Image 1 (cartoon, rainbow, N blue to C red):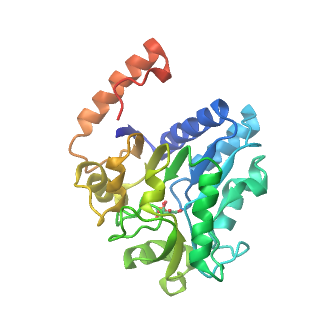
Image 2 (image 1 turned 90 degrees about the vertical axis):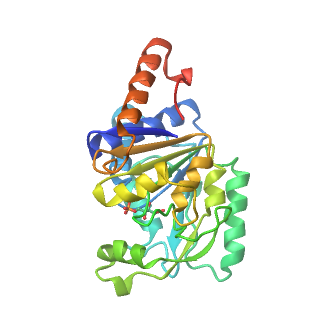
Length: 270
Ligand code: F6R
């Protein structure tokens, strides 16, 4: 795992958008796995800026979102489809048909989940999976206790997640109890994972993810099993990491190597 600690949420966003933009430039037909929530919003704003000011081209990019609330249609202002249009899709030149978000209104959820997995596979698999993390350590909506081999399926939201998302709905009672989410196993098949975390509320989950044991109680910890993971944090989210000084030192060495040989050198990461 490569742990990068940035000074501020703004620098996290610039760095994350830079990683996405590098991939889009290198592989215009890339497949991006996308997250919703407050964490990636600045990153999406930076991608929109890169599209506008530096002609970053999304015309061949394909995207798959991690999750959607059950019962919310694409036009519901609280749906994740709506979130993605508002924060990214409507502001870049991605063809709407290239964007995929799980269907929160499917009659046959199991079938829709199988279909979603098939579509990811047929698109060639996820090249870069962007992730946020819940205060309970979830990635996507893989709540504590989720199988680390899980695939796209229906999931019941944990009380912590309902509490954390209550503000967006005005009240906890209005937060849907169920979501369709890709599985931990689906995420682990991505070629590269980029997990972002901002703020002190995420510090404990980040410590457990990076320095704790691999456990289904903190599904983000399964990322320890992946060979290409970058954890990108602001100082507050890194606040409980015991080996912070070491992560900073690794980054300085990485920086030196990259300035000598260029970013493709591989170097000391992971
Ligand atoms: C959203 C998702 C969730 C969020 C997590 C953090 O698509 O998959 O795992 O990333 O709940 O949410 P925020 O960023 O709002 O703190």
